[in-house]
Image (tube, rainbow, N blue to C red):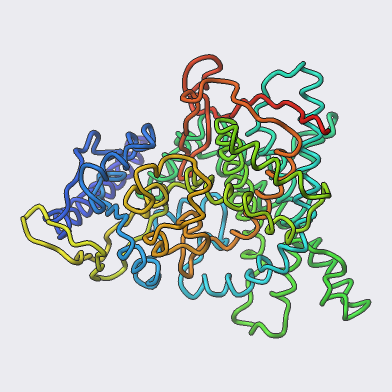
Length: 548
């Protein structure tokens, strides 16, 4: 009896998988790019080149040196993907989001974890989200919450100072501390929620929202879970199978939805209650300054037509979206910046001298932005080690992508553009653009902040929203929180570099990136204290600066 039930299910699943496999094979064979662009060999037809790319962060750079600025590699199930760092091509892609959209696979992966937030929204839906969210990430709003960034940076400084005293100067895992600090910041500045990660109540249970994300993104099985989520998004019928990580996603989503719903309802009630007492309070948010409150105010505004407002489910979904985007990338970016400063003591000393010229421990955003060398250090750190390494797009119709530099195809013809067939996947190589020797010169991989005194002419063509970098992408789908991230990073470096001399705890070449999804976090890859599996961390020697 059981076999009679299972057999049709198994046959249906296999037929579904076979159909998708044949579809991928057809798309690969029908793509005109296979006759034009070179491609590395495929080591594994299931994983394509993805595993070796994750294992070797410098692999795409090596391919670029071998094949040129445009080539094809193979992703999951050997789907071919266009990798191009040609700036004219990337500008065309960024300028036409109606053609080059987030792939259904990419959106499904995010949707399963984050819900219907802005990272999943597309086309008109994305425009609705941006209209409501833009005020929450504008210059005036970031200026008003900078004091939260500074306050939490000072709190982290004091935690580390105490830890150094108690351990007699043993190395500090700065990535772990930065995760706690950025968690506290996104809680308070993002949605008026206290995580108290830096000073936890030892008698209280772990924060549920933090625990949910830790299980998904920082557990020993995080990379496995991510791979399975991508596979399930590629072949949706696999979601019915009890694969590893399935229950972790379901449990995490439930916890995030529950907490998010509570936060949104409390914030909304507080805003509406204030407005009922005094209509002017809605305009001033009743004294609240967090991103969520500003977003709710915009969503409640009569200036936004009813059909353009976000639903309650869409508002709730912004909570885990803020958490994921604002917590992970900033802690990772700051950790890489501290690593670079630890291995470049002259740069560190010069930066400290500038920071100590400021007569306060609590600078405003304008005071932070008035520090030229701090700005150069931030730009250079985000160039050398962009936290997110790539993004993916998919062509929804046939197109032609212009090239800045003609290429000679495999067929011997000269191409000034690339023919794109509907369904073509495109890999936006953030790291490749930010470290291209054609743009930045032969020392492109070196950390040299003074390069920003004279920006290379080619860098002006990078289609990024900020700083002649591709770190935050560009076009209508650029990173909406880039001002938030920059202000927080500057507040952290201002506070920590003034307080500590930062030195390496292991050999310089022992530190390298470990990739989970699109994020590359620092880890000790070999030698003493080497990470196990997908563990990440950055041990540094922190020595309190003696004020004279």
